[in-house]
Image (cartoon, rainbow, N blue to C red):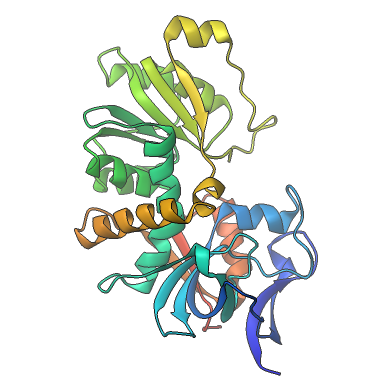
Length: 323
C-alpha cells in the first residue's frame, strides 16, 4: 500500500483538530486523475467546514478545495477545484472536468493563487454584476483572497475602482493594486457618495453580509447593483439584510448573488474564465498576493491567522514540507 502525508481532521472544532498523518494514496474512478500536489490553497470555506459551521464533512476528512500540481497520467501541470476537499495532501484525486492546465510562464504559486478566487472575483464582477468599462465599482474586503483579485480584474476591465479595507497596511496593499480610492469600512454610504460627487457607485461586490452591506446598498447609484458572494462578518444575524421592493423600485437598484459552484459545474465556462485570468496574469495585469506559504503541519496556525483577519491575499500550503 502506497502512503502519503495529509492533514486530517477526525472531529470538528478549532484549528488544533487538524493533524498530519500518513494515509493511503487515494484511488481514482472514471473521469478522475491523480495529481501530485505542490501547493494547496486555504479558503474561508475550509475554516467553516473545520468548525462545523454548516453541513459537517464526512469524517475523517482532508480539507482543501484548490490545488496545483502534476497530473500523473500525462505529466501536465494543472490547477484543480475539488468540490469535496482533499487538497491538504501530497496526492489528490482530481475530477478531470474541474482541472485546467497551467500555461508556461505561470508559476504553481500564482496559478493556484489566481484560479479559484480569481474566478469568483471575475464571476461576481461580470456574470452577476454585468460590469461595463467606465463604471465605478466598490470592492469590500479588498485585501482578501477574492477582493484583491477583484480590484485588479476590475481595473483591467476599464472600471473606476474603490477598494474597502480595514487596516492601513491592507489599504496600502489595495492602493498598490491600482484602486482609484481606498476607504475605511465605516459610514460607507457617505464615503461612496463623497468620492463620486454624490452619485454613488454602479456596482458593489461584497462578502461581508451585515451592517457594512446595508451601508453599501445605500451607496448605490440609480441602476446600481450589489452582488454578494459570501457573508464573512462575525456579527449576529450575519448574512441577513433586508431591502424592500419599494426601495429597489424607488432607487432603481438591484441585488444579486454569485456562487462559484455554478462555474465549476459548467466546464466550458470554467475553461473560458481560467483562460482569461491566465492571459491577464501573462500580461502582468493580474497577480495573486501570497501572504504566506505554510508547511503541512502548520495549517492549523494558518487557519487561526485567517480567522483573526491577520492575513491579506492568498495563503498557501506547501504539502511536501513540514517544520
